[in-house]
Length: 479
Image 1 (cartoon, rainbow, N blue to C red):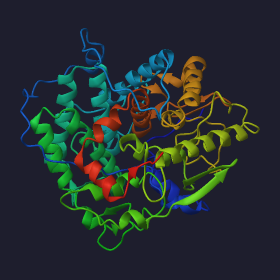
Image 2: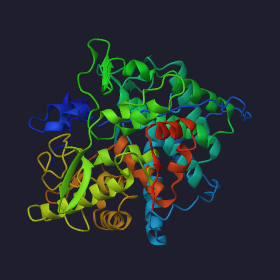
Image 3: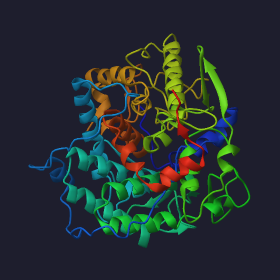
Image 4: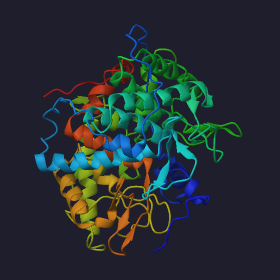
């Protein structure tokens, strides 16, 4: 078995770098594996809560603490998502509990930053944190509190440590954060870019914390300050098509968010800003290509499945549409097309079946690979990526649950202390030794959305999120 060399130059490339470097992939060059920018609002009149200065327990003690609060009731999802059976709910709870352990153990109690990836043994020494993983991690804290995996005080203390660090110590440019940072100091690593989409993911997590811990005035105020520091107008000074990022050495990156992808959240948060809002016309500027596979038509890109998932981890598109589409329904169609695509691949790779499918950008035996389809993208070799189906749970709950039960019951090496490994290949008996924060994150968030709609419900309480969708022209879907 070939093991990845995580410290090589290849492993430091973002999905953007890999997509841009994938010759002949057409539109894929413009996509970024790291995503979104979310919004923040003031609520300075909220009542203050007790101080969060108490040092948190160790990871293992916090996750296994006796007497942890029981999960409070959560609103059932709307009828657009079929009910989850008790058996399915039990598995999803196990998945969420284990994936949360990644965010708790691989997040710094001092800075609140979360490692980009970690070895499934838990013995990780890398100092490279990802601001996108941190955004997922902040949301994971809210879920863990709601489900009783840790106490509310422990969850709030960790969130507050992150917000204080992000506001006071993390380097920024016009309010945007560098993609990768030292988990201890916050300093830029690997000459990474100031990232529009990764900052957005971080902001989405910050906004989720703001609403979930709204009784704590410092959480609300820090979230307000961090979000309103982001200068979206700088990002759109010369173009309606927002750039992927900026570096002090070279200025704006040449790639633009010009085709449908996970970038919807960037535009929506920018539109929702009250201090530095994007102009309304930016929502109309990006292209919505239409694809068709096996009679299924949908808006998409030449890109992996994650582009249909990430914006919808926070933004609730159910029963809504803009002038172009109902994007929740669009993701249902795109996911079904991907499932059918994998079944077709089963003729070549017999591990793919109704019980085992899902390919998205991930680790492989040969290193990190951008693959998926339809149309076929990358050197597909029979590798299965658990976050591909798991991140689509709200779109195809029953087909996805069949896959998750199968992986949990029959592929023991794919299950770890942090949930599912990032990828595995049953045909070659290769199992990854890592999990990746953003893939673990999309698994946890979409599992909770499928169970309760909690992340959608909490995030969409932010006026910036509502304003962004209003300015983009979203209306309730007419029956």
